[in-house]
Amino acid sequence: MDFRERVRGALLGGALGDALGWPVEFRRLDRIRAEYGPEGLTDLADAPLGGQVTDDTQMTLFTAEGLLRGGRPEDLHAAYRRWFTTQRMSGPGPRPDGWLAAQEFLYASRAPGNACTTGVATGYRPAAPFGQDGPVNPGSKGCGTVMRSAPFGLIGLDPEQAFRRAAVAAQLTHGHPTGYLAAGAFAALVTLVATGTPLRPAVDAVLVRLDAQDRGAETAAALRRALRVAAEGPGSAEAVERVGLGWIAEECLAVAVYAALVGTDARAALVLAVNHSGDSDSTGAVCGNLVGALHGLSGLPADWCELVEGRDVVLQVADDLVTAFALGNRTALDGRYPTGT
Image (cartoon, rainbow, N blue to C red; front, side, top):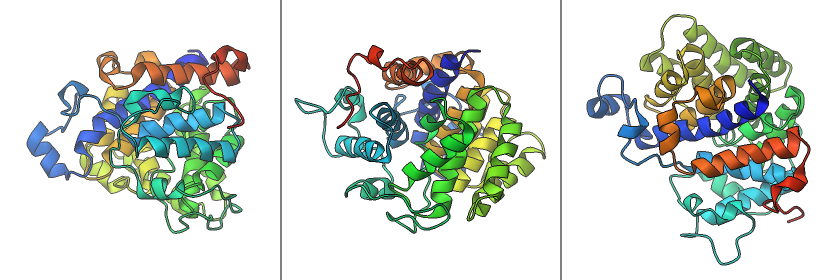
């Protein structure tokens, strides 16, 4: 499987998990089962919101755009400011700042995270040393750090570089060390999986990195809990809820890893990742990033791919990441990503 196939799978898989989880976010498991049956919501075609994506996919795309428009923390902050604009307007203005900001479907506010919105509402502030509280929302370790960080693992960095750059960018909105270190762990994990490492050895490698990191213990403990529960037998919603509910960064990552480990294929993993009493769209999105990187675009449910909102834009961004970073050909991007802005 070539790298482009994995990058396309990772970004579109995230959108699929986001869209499947969005209708059941904020709903308890018993209510989900009462409406959809004992297995919960199992088919995107049955989702009442028509394949809509949320801030999880939106911010992932703007993360990719920030990388394509320079990649410095300041560039990521500017990209997240452009995302923030989409949350306050009904559609793009007459002169949108770049190609991505011109996409109509992104102008939807679907329960964006508080720390994400407040974090980018002010000017850029440099990150703190790892293990210390960051300068923005220092008490927050919400899953908004993890759900947007897959692109750092899809641009040809080694796992250590991906970890570091994702963790720095996570501090733009969330200052709690667990929040930004979980984002770094996820980016490193995506890097390993997207370059062909099986998921379990990739998790083990990330755990080594977390164990060596001051304040990495919470994320490491959550991942070890996911591994332990996964080893007990077939997946279930009750087992997911033993791993976590996904509202906080380390639990979001752990639930996604659990579902990806025990799911028999991408569809099964995504269904498992969203049917629980927690942050279903975020756990679905992160699981989708992982299974998409594992199985590639062709391993995702083809019928769901046809239904998800923004499919062509997501795939274009994936191709642009590969063109710019794996192939080193930024000049082929047709002016979609102006730099220095």
